[in-house]
Structure formats: structure tokens, C-alpha cells
Length: 538
Image (cartoon, rainbow, N blue to C red; front, side, top):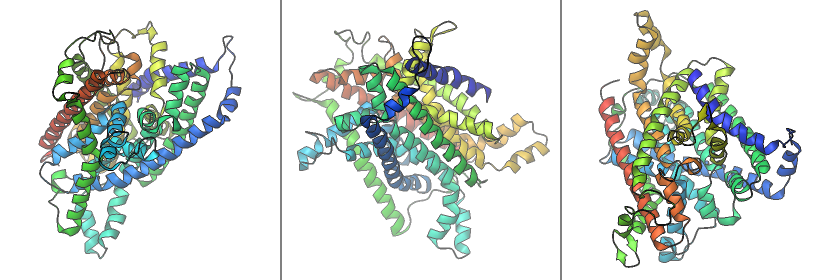
């Protein structure tokens, strides 16, 4: 636990506490706790809190409803192009939330595809926000739940069927309890992401809707009211901490040792009308909710006033004459990849140590540590980004001019995904296997290498994919700390969208398309590597 605790203390707790302290303390050092009641009693703040809560609950429920059938299809069914499709459904998760909102605006907004074809507009409605959240979080459920589902031994459910249980009863009493920790982990991540939604709400909801994240940004950047921002940040802390405590307590009661097998032993071609119908429904939902917005995005990157062409892509190679970017926009691709690779390595090392520590179940201290690891997903990225600027600017940690600052911020978001992906599988490993290895003379390190690692290697690769994805698309904190001479793709896209003109918009679409392709290729390679290395190991 020592390394993860030190990492979070220095690069998360310290920056956030510094921001809160500046907002709630006067120049003479007195605390202004009376601002809590004053801020939280304001009608506009109460409206923000209520909307944040109910839209996050609705987004989580809708995502689970649509994505759980997809998790089953990817886990239990085998079909041509499965690896490609798995990579495609993960692409939205790495896209900057700015581009998620923009892609849906091009689809459901004024002059969008639905408006042109049928006169239907969903922008400035909550439905556009909910659908965009499903688009963004679909992969969280498919990979987190599907990763464990693919390794559950189907013979346990078949045994229940032999003993007289119906298909539904066997699934409900055997498979569902085993999947509960993974489903709860996926629901938790989706809820935290949607509760902190910023760009999607701002672009699709307009001024009528505001979440805690958008309100903290407005109070910090537009009004420079650090007191109100600090109060709202602490509200986030309390709410997220309570949710994580309930989650940890609930899941712990339902954990059990599971019999895990190789995914290749559980997948099969669709059989029967029911499976073919489910397979078709999942493909249709993926086509409408994921492929269609991505297709609109690609189309806009080629569409110019003179017809379709590569004008916007060629413009990426030139230096911005306004001076906003000190390097050609094409260089942001290499910057993003380098940052993401370093952040992934950091997230795997820190998250792997944390997940291993959490499997030991060493009382309340470890349970509190589990909750701490998830806090970056529920705390405003604006707060973290500003905190980096005011705390990491003097010895012994003067990092504001260092390139490592960006991967550190990205790793903060990647670690929770590594932990939540690996933990259900690590806790499902039968302790008797480790004990047997110890009896045969294996050291703890060798027992871990021979017993745990083969079983969790699949989860480790999935975790690496998630960490790389979220690092590649992280925007909230990176926008404050990325330097003009080393911008990332999401930062460049956001700044281009904030500038008027057809060329800027087209370049933003082109960069987003490149980001989408890079992510799809990277995830496809990961799928191939994962399949090659997990074959025959179990």
C-alpha cells in the first residue's frame, strides 16, 4: 500500500486540499465555514445538485440496460470480427468529452443528421445528454463485466440446469451472483463519470442544465469565486466517499471464490432463435449509438465548402499563425501517444500494487484505501488541474515546466480503472491454490507468478487498455497543465472548437478522427496480444 498511498497523497490529496484551503481561509488564516450554509442554500446551487444526482442515476441505469446484453455477447458468443468490434465500442471512451458532445450535436442538433432527415432535434434536452453518456460509457460495462463473464465456467450453470433449474433460474442463482462485483464496479464507474460530466452537458444541454463539474468550472474560471468552488468540491468529496463506502460494503458481502477458465472455453457461435435475436439487437444498438455518431464525425472531417477532400488534414501540418499552438497540430499525435504510454505504465504499476493489497482484506484501513483510489473519478478535474499549478511550482517538486506533469495527471484517472478491472478477478482466485503452491515450497513471489499471474493476465491487459484509453482522452486536468509547445490531442481539439471559422472546426474534426483511428488500432493490437497470450494458459 505504501507506493499507491504516497502517490495519491502527493499528486491528488495535496493539490485538492490546497485549492480548498485557499477558498475557505481568509488572509489572516481564519476559516469561513459559514459559507457552506450560505452556498448550499442558494436555489441555483440546489438545482445543480439535484440535476447532477438524477441524471447520473438515469445515465447509469440506461447504460447498464443497453450495455449488459453487449457484455454477454462479447463474453459468451464467438463471431467474425469480434476483436475489431470490441475495439470499436471502446473508441468512444477515449474520445475527449468535448468531441463526444460535438459528435452528438452534429447528429441530433440544429442542422444535424436527424434534423435534416426527419426534422428531429434533441439538443437542449436531457435525452441528448443521456444518450451521449451511454455512447461514452458503453465500453466500461462491456469490458468490466464481460471480462469476468468470459472467464466464468459455464459448467456451473449447466449443472444447475441438470438439477432441474430453468435457464432463467440457473442464470439468476449461479451466474448473476458471481457477476455482481463486476456489475457493481461498472455501475460505480459510470455513475462517477456521469455525475462529473462537463463538456457533454455544456454542449448538448445548453444553459438550461448544469452539473457540479460545470458549476465548479464556472465559479473557478469565469468568476474566480474559489470559495463557492471549494464548497462544491467538498460536497463532491462527501458524496463520492459515501457512495464508495456503501459500494465497498455491499460488494464485500457478495464476494466468493469463482472457478475461472480460459475465455476460449466459454465462447461459441450463436445458437437458437433467442441468441441470434440478442446478437442482432446488440449489433443494431452498437450501429445506432456508437457507429453512427462516429460516422458523422468522420464525414465532417472530409466535408468542406467545396466538397469532400483532405483540406483539413493537410492544414494540420502547418504552424498556427495565431500563435495558439507553437508546433504543427500534427505533432499533437506523437505528444498524446508518449504521454499516454507513460501514464499507462504509472497506472499499471500503482494500480497493480493497490489491487494486490486490497485482496488481503486487512480490515478498515484497507477498505478506506479502496475508497481513496476511486476519489479522482468523482472529484472535479478542474480542481485537480488548478491544484497542480499552485502546489507543484516550487522545490522539492517544481514540476510545472516538466513534461511528466501531464502523465501524472492522466495516471490519476487511470489507476481506478486498473484497480476496478483487476480486483474482481484477483479476489476470485481460490486461496487454496496459493496455499498449495506454498506447501510445495514456492516463495510468495513465485506463487504469485505461477498462480495469480496466469489467471489475471487477461484482466491486466484489459486494465492496460483502459488506462491507455483514458490517458489518451483525458481533458479536464490536462487543459490547465499542457504546455503550448507540447499540447495533447484533446486540448488541441477543444481550443480549435473554441475558435470561429470553418477551417478551425474542420481541423478539430480531422484531429478527432485521427484520435479515433489511433485508439481503434491500439485497442485492436491489444485484443490480438491478449488472445495470443491467454490461449492455453488456464
